[in-house]
Length: 523
Image 1 (cartoon, rainbow, N blue to C red):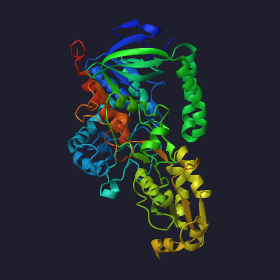
Image 2 (image 1 turned 30 degrees about the vertical axis):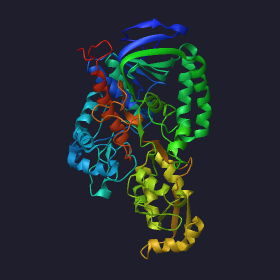
Image 3 (image 1 turned 45 degrees about the vertical axis):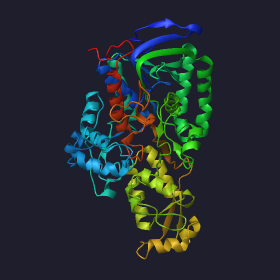
Image 4 (image 1 turned 60 degrees about the vertical axis):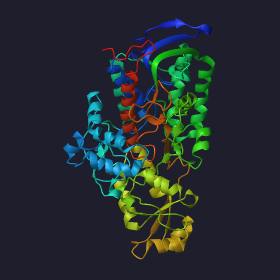
């Protein structure tokens, strides 16, 4: 028996096709069921459209395994309750430093002006937030705090905390998606899981009118679901094992997927990025090696390729966010970040993506964090109070086995492979009490100290509607599209962009007349 989420509730037509395939019809078809896809489906359904959602796996995507942080500001309820002063203008001033000219000034302004309302919209769907403010700088707060400084605001003279973590223990992304999925279900939206989109269908004028897919049924469906679940977490921390576990999943799709065609008035691509596609990474972002791929096997660039095949253009595919978090513990930020020549590397207090980028551009992609004895002692005292489990084992490893020690700067430099003269010149006379340690924070593939990364570029879209430029009937959102975070990333900005762009695409797609000339808004 299928779950309520998988039951076909609203389908206008179903008829056999040649070769045993079937056809289904909806007003709006959404490809991908992460945060962007769910938000698009909700808005399209609320506009009166009959909506169908596809997902290659069981839904959730990178959203469900994320930290569940939504970047929001300008005076949210949680900011006001915590005494954090912020305005949309201040938020826009800071984000312009991160966003650059990736999106137009008007788009960024709308994003900031609508930010507080976006959080209220999520709360109205049952997504819980909390105003407990984290008093120290961290990459991700513990279960005592749910509002924190998640970007590099202090580097630009601001101090407003804008990282809104969904109220849940551990990483919160699963609860975020669960609540969004429930809202989709409550609106009678059809969700077809374990269905892979393979080709966009277009008419003689180039308008997208549907999708050709392959869907699983019976025992193959069960095996696919179980095997995929087993592969997700190992795939994050042990990529080789993840690839091995995924092979039978892909085999089931190829061998037992049945053809399905879905006709639609409009299609929205929300199928994630391409961090798991080696060919696209080599072609567009060859410098980003050694990072931990953050996402699921669904982040294989398939949504981007579908859009390109239909005539869409891409941008910023070379932009990849690789994170090198130095905290928690927060005392780590008092260290000196240097390259192999002993020269200073960036600002340790900036967000992990900015630190990671600075390290990646250093000679050999190598960097070390210099701490004196007093700072090291403070770090060790803070470990247990400032970390969750996944941060704790990394911090403990760095503070025990992941560093070298020396009684002098020259001695510790030689042991680490750093130029002693360069380190002494950079550190200066007021270095602090010995002994000194150098922690290797280079960006490379290490299970004990991974550097997570995700892709930021995608299909170019109209910033008013979310339509893929030059392709009528096709929309895109999330990491399949160029968005707010496509130049640089701070924690929560991708999920916030998924909500912002997903809602935009859903509203616009629902307003498109279908092929019979009727308007999709039929309320």
